[in-house]
Image (cartoon, rainbow, N blue to C red; front, side, top):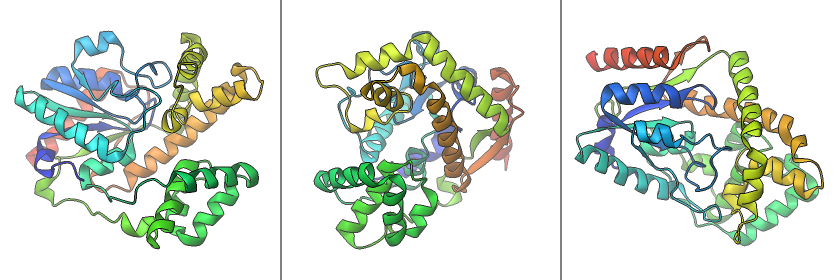
Amino acid sequence: MSFSFELLPACWFLVGPTATGKSAAALVVAEQLGADILALDSMTLYRGMEIGTAKPSEIDRARVPHHLLDLLDPWEEYSLADYLAAAESAVRQVLSRGRVPLFVGGAGLYLRGLLRGMFEGPAANWDLRRELEAFAKRNGNEALHARLSAVDPTLAAKLPPADVRRIIRGLEVFEATGRPLSEQQQQGPRPIDERPAVVPWLNPPRERLYARIDQRVDEMFAAGLVDEVRSTATRPRGLGRTARQALGYREILDAIEAGASPESARELIKTRTRQFSKRQCTWFRNLEECRPMELTGNETAAEVARRYLEIRSVDRAE
């Protein structure tokens, strides 16, 4: 399945790693364009996960219409194909009202799917996944990563040992097809006239980004992240495999289950969020449709919005 490519030229994109101020800048951009915001994020899809996913507030949603939020309960699973179908429906609805669809977020896999389509791989093999998860717990993530390196070194080079979910998917696809997943994910970019004008991604200096990440994690704890994680996890059906992997939720739950204080997870969350931001930047750099928008990290939302609109206007003129 692919997002209908004829819709791409009508779509705008504002992307970047976590904690770069995308959401605040997007509100300003949307107000100037007459746009609706479409979330480009895999975890804001879940209802009840507000603080840990930095979901737009009710005030922000009243200010500008938002889509692709709160589609799922935390125990439900969701695929790239599901997201692309929901995104197409949302874009068509936005366009039908004479508004501009503005995708905002940092999910590299979802962005790539929108821009290039997707490889429709084999269905999930839950028995194999459980076996591989147990292997990682017994032998360590590095041992699981080594197994992927043996069959798909290209994919393994892109994934850190901590990214167990995608490592398992790579092994699962190889087991089912006999071919490396990286070999099968070779969708190239669309022709120039079938792409968005440009996909700017916000790129502040790393030290500024890391400082903002640390600040955001502290703010999440102050806002009640631990209580939110406890509340979500103790619902009758709890958290599904995907939702449990959300940054912050996983680390706090692991601490609780180990009998440690949830507060002890704070520094680990900061570290893993910084690592996650590096992986996000790798996604953007590897998509030729994306262009880095260099920032100092001190810009206001209005300044970022102005720069973004200037870049877009120049590319439209070209």
